[in-house]
Amino acid sequence: MNTPEEHKPHERISRAKARAAAGPTFLQHSFRPFFMAAGIWATLAVPFWLLSYRDFLTLPADFDIYLWHRHEMLFGFAAAAIAGFILTAIPNWTGRLPMSGWRLGALAALWLAGRLGFLAAVWAGPIVVAVLDLSFLTALAAVIARELIRGKNWRNLPVLILICLFGLGNWLVHFQTLDLAETAELGIRLSIFTLATLLALIGGRVVPSFTRNWLARRGIEGLPEPMGRFDKIALAVLIVFVVAQVFAPDALATATLALLAGGLHGARLLRWKFWKVLSEPLLWVLHLGYGWLAVAFILIGLAGITDFVPAKAAIHALTVGGFGTMTLAVMTRASLGHTGRELKATWGTTAIFVAITLAAALRVVEPFLDGQFPSAIWISAIAWTAAFGTFSVLYFPVFTQARVQPRQPSARPN
Image (tube, rainbow, N blue to C red; front, side, top):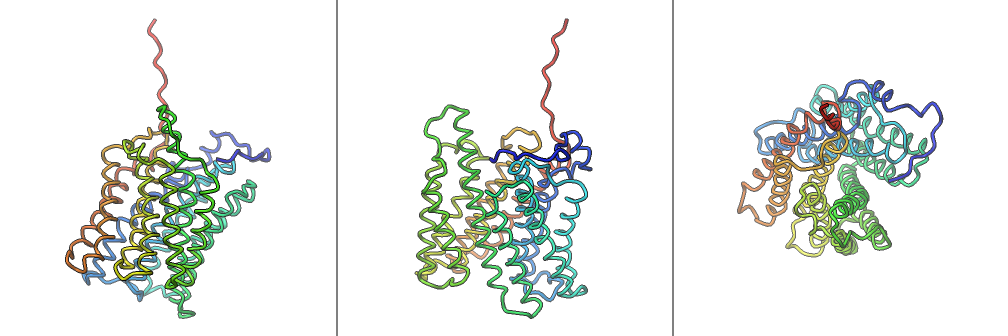
C-alpha cells in the first residue's frame, strides 16, 4: 500500500465533508454500484445466453450469440467488477478522495447504457450500440489516469495500461460489428488475457498480504514469501505468454510459454502457504481463484500440444474458474471491509464460494465428457447463477446501507 502523497490545501477535505458531498449512500464508494452491477449482470446474462443457445429465447439484436456471451462476460460483468475494485483502491494508492456522488452515478450510467444498447440494437443500430458500449471503459481509463497522475502514483501505471488494453479489445470487437475489420476474435483474446494479467498482478499483492496478516494475528509461523525476484520472473513470463497468445495462439512456442507460466504461478501460489488458511473461507477462496489461473495456463499449454485437452476446457478454467472465483472473492471481502463489517464469511457467503467452485469444475470437465453428460453445462450455469444471485441478494444491504459504526463501550452505572 502506498503512502499518501502530499496534497494541495483545497484537497484536504475532512471525512465528514466528503461524506456530505458524496450524496446517497449507494454512490459514496465505487464498489457499491459496480459490485452490485457485476453481481446482477452475471446472474442475468448467463441464463439469457444459455436459453438463447438452446433456442428458447432470441437475442434482440443482429449479433452472434456466442460473441454476445463472451462480450458481456468481459465488458459487462468483468468490467463492472474491475471498475468497482480499482476505483475503490485508488484512494488508498494516492491519498485522494474517492470518486462519489453524481460523477460516480454518471460513470455507472455509462456502464448500464452499454448493456441496454445491445438489448435495443435492432432499433438503435450498430453505431449507437458501439458508442454507448465503448464510452464506459474509455471514461474509466480517463478517470484512473487522472487520479494516478494527480496523486503521482506511478507505481500503479501498469494497472492503467492493462485497463487501456482491455478496453482496446472492446474497440476491436466493435470494428467487426461495424463491418470495418475482422477483429472480434483478436479483441476477445486480447481482453481475456489482459484481464488474466491484471488479476495475476493484483492477486499477487492482495492474496499474500491478506494471508500474511491473518496468520500473523494468530501467531502462526511460516508466513507467505514476500514479493521478490521469483514473482517478477513469473509475471514477466506471463506477459510474454499473453503477447504470444494474443498474436500467435496456435504456435508451439505459445503452448510452451503457457505451460511455463502455469508452473511458475502454481509455484507462486505454493509460496503463499494456502494450506494454512483452509479454515477461513474469505482467504481460501482467494487462493482458489489464483489457483484457477495457474490451472488454466497449464490447460491452455496442453491444449496446444495435445488433442486430449479441449480448448473450451482451458478457456473456461480461466474465465469461469479464474475470473468468476477471483471476482467473487474480492467483491465479498472488499464490500465487508469497506463498510465496517467483520471480515468473516457467513454460511451464505461460504455457499457462494461453493457454488462458483461447482460451476467452474463442471464447466471445465464438460468438454472432456464428449457429450456423455449433457446436463453438466446446465448445472454449471445454474451454479453460476446461484452464486452471483445469492451474492446480489445477500450483499444488497451492504451496498445500500451506511457504513457500520463500531460499538461504543457502555458507560458503567453509578
